Image 1 (spheres, helix red, strand yellow):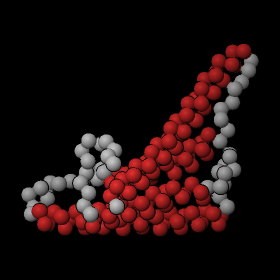
Image 2 (tube, helix red, strand yellow):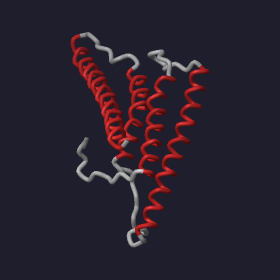
Image 3 (cartoon, helix red, strand yellow):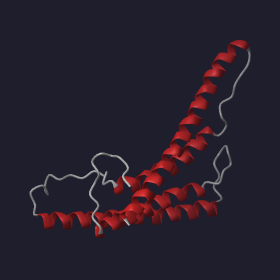
Image 4 (tube, helix red, strand yellow):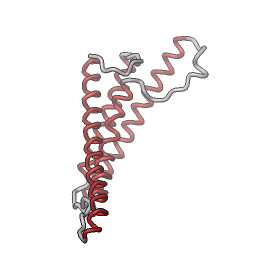
Length: 172
């Protein structure tokens, strides 16, 4: 199970990275068009920026950012403070760790529930992006999948403790 979750969360995070790189490429293109427009004005011409740039960035960033959460959970990359538990008995530490993992999974599922609700409302309203006219509800799907995968990883860690990897390198 551990190897499957590692590969799945890593692939999901890489896909999120590809989406972010696409956003960067579109942003560079849009900034380039803006710069070229400033140059072309000296010659009486104009170059327009990308229509719907803001729509594209808003929708794709909202889809891409949650895609890193399952990998972060797999790597135990979330913030934790060990000030009080540093000297506690090992059994108590394991109990607190498992309790926090269950609570993390419940929070992720709670957020997924509300994202599903938001998707349904957005779809029922027929919400479209302002300039591009894209339907907005499909951009909820990666976030919902990310939250569910995050919860699955946290629950798997409850039953099969996976130590954090300190080197940050994909293993598998």
